[in-house]
Image 1 (tube, rainbow, N blue to C red):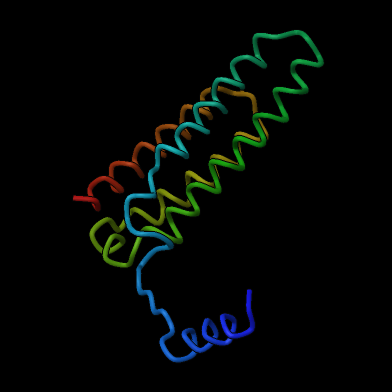
Image 2 (image 1 turned 120 degrees about the vertical axis):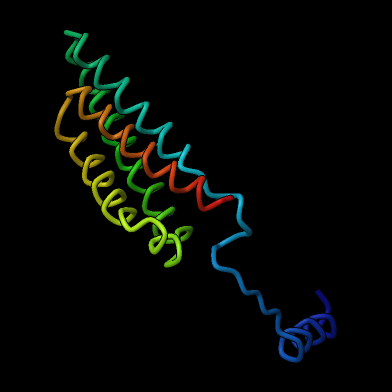
Length: 138
């Protein structure tokens, strides 16, 4: 880039800085609890496969995958909680904080157990969050 072009580009930034205002990282439409649910489905399916196997190597790989997916569930829930949900959503749905807290705790619990019932509880908790999410999108 020529020196003059660099100077003009810098001048443009200083004189007319871009200002963006949004309540989230990108315009609405990029958030979806389905991401957390897909990972939770993987957790539950992996729990079931681990329980059905006697192959030590398969079980070891399954445990690693299950823990990775459980962390991804937590990540997607935290993104919804910190980037999407706003105070007015909590006012309308006072149980939202508790639902997100319980679901992230259950995701952590799935890392400690191979009980598919815990995986199903995680799916149910995500579904409850999704109901609120879709209500806020109306």
